[in-house]
Image (cartoon, rainbow, N blue to C red):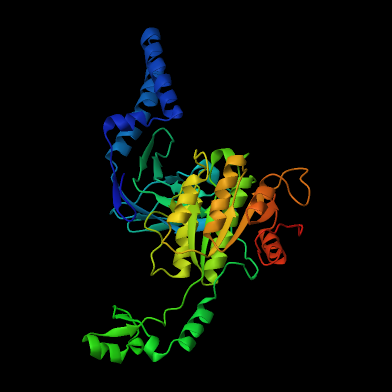
Length: 439
């Protein structure tokens, strides 16, 4: 039986496959029957011969019956939801329908599930009448982010004696996306951020007079209330006011993905904390109206070279970025040079805010973090805490402080909202600040 979701699969295989479906019990019956026939021939026992023939014939009859049985079964799978944060359960609902004119026997269902999501679920369905449906459900949960295939679904058909078992599989599968867990962050004033969406809109409307309007051509979807009639009459085509487009604050979130910069692995590692922190900052800033760009130290923007699209809503952009963070991996990139090139390449505009989740830094990285700081208006870095480090900070924190960054140390398990609030207390992310108050 093979077919996609909702497509019927026909249960009919070759005789060789049916013989290969003999269970241990069926093979034992054949062996015992053959031995009884041989002993009956040697000893001349007619009663033992009849027993041997019965033991040998019963598995073969069951093989022939299952071989000639035709079942048309359709199956579909539904995930609710299809994307969940780490540590959260998702429901998987399986629907099996008998689309043939004959009832089925006992069906055993098994769905293939990666080991990180738990054990493989198994179900037993009694006789399904023609046109009948059966629905079963199970739940999966993962503490590791990523994309995990669910399926294909396997169905097993057995005879009443348990002598033969035939297995058929559907070819389709679904994908469960486990995204990093996000935490709600408090609203703090960040250095280097421009005015918000509403403030920028009010300021542009208040300062721009009719003579200061720079019109542009009408585009599909523009509000007709923005049509500038004087320019329309001058150019002979519909023109709209450009100054009503508010200036959105900009932020770049940088995630250090260098393999050598992180120690340990697993859900409790510093790298996973950084991935979850980057996801929380991205969602928080998008909710505040920021234009967010997510970079890794490979220089590649996430979710891809095409970005998220200028017309995407904040929720759509957040979803795409979270799905990209679900599969981000550590790379063998040796340094931060590609990340610096990506920041300097950009779109030609300076300023904005940079929030970086960094790993271990060496002396060579010092010059590169200085170049990053010159590119942006405000810079905040989360760096792993070194055991025994003084409050003022040494090593990486001192390097960042001297370069004009605001450096916040963390350890896996620390609450990001508290650190985010400390950043505001550290002088509104003023350049040259660290937690501890020392410049």
